[in-house]
Length: 260
Image (cartoon, rainbow, N blue to C red):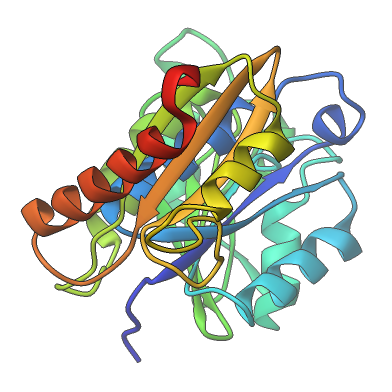
């Protein structure tokens, strides 16, 4: 069954992320890419290197979204458990792909090295999944279906993840023809978050902070700068979406005045 990708989740896997030892830049990059394509990212999840928890995350997210993009856990060591967790979520066996094993051997051979036996695990995939080529490393990606969601598992290193996303995930994204997601950001200074929200609630045309309006308006504060984020998800042309954002941005500017 072919499904359309309206919603997505980004799953980051690794102890170094949950322990705060590494900064997860992958999630931000993937979320921006999916949003630009018209897929609404509804959840970011970060899981440590635990087989049960990773498999549980795949199963839970697959019941909620149409598309899951996971990064990390595809290396050759004992703590790289993504392929095993995906197999468990799919209720499938792991099988060795001889063609991919040959590619990994060739990768090492091209650098004058013999493939360590531990890298053999990278040629394992769940039955029903397919490999994604990785010209920048030894860890091939994986594409599969879990429940109602299409799942893509990509390597953690950004220099491997980004080319694979662009080559395999982006072309496979099935966004409804009338689906558009457009965003706009306004910056302000000198006004607190709650004060800004109260001014926008008092907009004479109607409460700009209502969560059921479109374009949707949200407010965040960081390091003294207040950011007002607008998001339009209505059907129509890009020009119509931009016009709606223009109209809402004008109302925000009228409410916040000199603070913008």
